[in-house]
Image 1 (cartoon, rainbow, N blue to C red):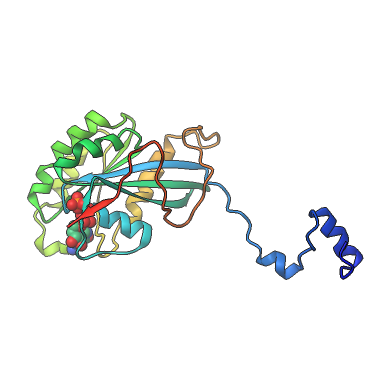
Image 2 (spheres, rainbow, N blue to C red):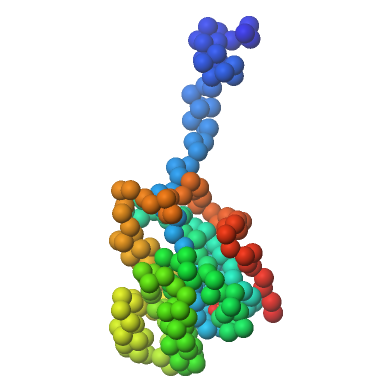
Length: 240
Ligand SMILES: Nc1nc2c(ncn2[C@@H]2O[C@H](COP(=O)(O)OP(=O)(O)OP(=O)(O)O)[C@@H](O)[C@H]2O)c(=O)[nH]1
């Protein structure tokens, strides 16, 4: 025993396996391990090239916006843990390339998604016209019980608007269970709402008091994590 310790410190040190006891201030400074997340949920963002999928994801996870983003090649992902209805949910967000030539890669990511965010650009007619094509991808590759959310992005460009809010609403109303929302990644308008609304809808379908093994997570992080889920091919390549 260390002769410099008083009796009480020695007893505590022995109980703690030999280390001297911490003072009150020291123990307050010591960080507790984070509480594990209650659920792990995957969502995927799809839509035509340049509609702002990456921008929406990065605004939500990092609160950043890139004016001249590079186009996504294949897939990319970020993680953010959110707290909703007293539960910690570790959200894994998959951002997919809008270019058709990557469909064979991106389609592999639909199956595990509990939520799908389908994005178009309110200033670009062709991105709205492409929506039926994306719906075909959802029908073919996604799980039937995935929550669907249609997002008209770039709401800050109101003066350049081509697709009215009613057109977006009408499209969503024709698809069973699909929600609709307009947003701006640039102005950070409705971005948190998009993700939280989707997670809320996903939670509504889960048995909240007994998380299933598939959804139960042992890792909690409030920061994006540099992690690649082992079951999926490595993502993240960006080109000009
Ligand atoms: N004005 C405005 N521009 C935006 C908004 N969101 C994205 N952009 C811009 O639109 C361009 C494309 O954005 P991205 O986020 O890369 O689009 P994407 O859908 O991920 O594109 P792909 O990876 O090619 O499929 C970039 O120049 C962004 O700065 C927005 O809300 N408002």
